[in-house]
Each structure stands twice: as C-alpha cells, then as structure tokens.
Length: 260
Image (cartoon, rainbow, N blue to C red; front, side, top):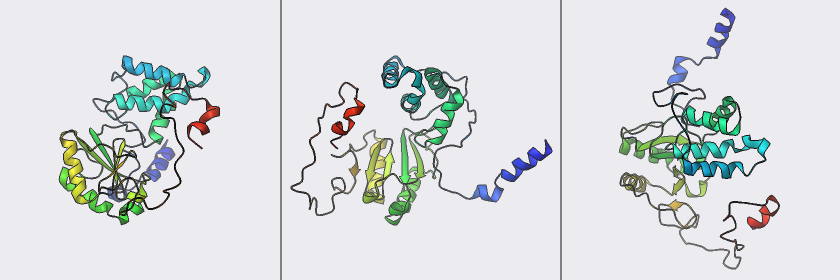
C-alpha cells in the first residue's frame, strides 16, 4: 500500500508546475468531479423530437454495431443540454448503444468537441496556434478578456460567454480567428471582435457568409484584397443540392455525391 502511495506521489505535478498557465486542449480534466447539476443521479433523457434523430442515427449502422453511433449521439445530447455533457447524458447514450458507461466516458473525454463542464451560451474557442499568433491572436485574446472581464478558460457571471484558447482550427489563411459555437469568425481585429461580442449580447451574431464562415474584414472566404484573381474559366463541379435530402447515403456512391 505504501509503495502504491509513493508511486502516485511521484506522478503528481508539483505545486509550481500546476501554477503555470498553459494552453488546454479541452474545457475540463479527464476525470469527473460531481457538481450539483452534474452527477449520475441527475436526470437526462432525449426529447421526443430528438429520439427521432436517435433512431435515424442508429439506422445507419448494423444492429450489432450500435456503438458506432456514440459520437453523433453524444453530439446530439450536448446540443440538447445547452452545449455541454453531464455524466447522466453519457450514461443515457451508453444505455442506448448497449455499451459500458466507461466506453462512452473515454470517447467524451478524448475528443475536445465534447464539453463535460458547463460552458456559456456563446462558447468562444480562440485559435492560438502559430499562424494566428503571428497575425495577432494574443491581442484578440487580451481584447476579449478585457471586454468580458474573464480570463482564458473562464465564463462570464451571466453565463453568456466562455473563452478558451485552443490549438489549430484550420482557418490559417484568415487568421486570427475564433470559433463561436459552430461558426467561424475570421480576419479579426480588436475592433471587430468587440463588435462581434456586442452583437452576441443582443442575440444577433452576424450570419455566416457565402462559404459558411465570416471574415470580419469584408472579404469573401479566402479571397485576397483584390478579390478573385484566378480560376475564372475552371468552374467547380455541379453538386445536387438535395443529394442527402432523405438522410440516406449509399456508400458506393459517396464519390459521386461529393463530386470527386
């Protein structure tokens, strides 16, 4: 018993190491800590409407491979629960896919897309990786922290905003940027990020641009300041807008659907 305690002690970080602020890859530790609104006894169940989606998700997999639906079911539960996953929701998913709860916990704690602690209505993930850092992400972070009165990893008292600095979000060409819930706001400056925050306070975040993101400097997608200067004669393949209308996809035709 004593040797086990000594082994555990050797693995624990020092107090000085824990005091150093580092960038995290998620919103919580890999282990669960009970809070009043997050215990195994806390009630969670999918709504009647979402059970239709549960059945639709499970219908995509063979009956003996229900566990393949863990990730989309966790995503559905998180969206229903205001952007985060209580342990009771993970237990419900485990029950539906007939898996041990630990199998679901390990998925939820591995992927940073799942928040196992409460986040604000607007979850701001600020990219701090090299291209964004070079283009001013530190100034964007300081602006957000000052304007909202929170630090990295914190949530405003009214529960409206949570700020978390994360690794690359794949929008390097339009750095610096943030992911706000599901949406990308790019080419930010301290001025435009404040405009974005104020719009969110009014419940009117700017709508996405033509290509599913919004550069806040007026450009379209990744076009430069001169606009589109190449590929005038090479048109993209035509894609059937209703190709997934019934929610079913024949794996053999995926390349056709994606215009490969």
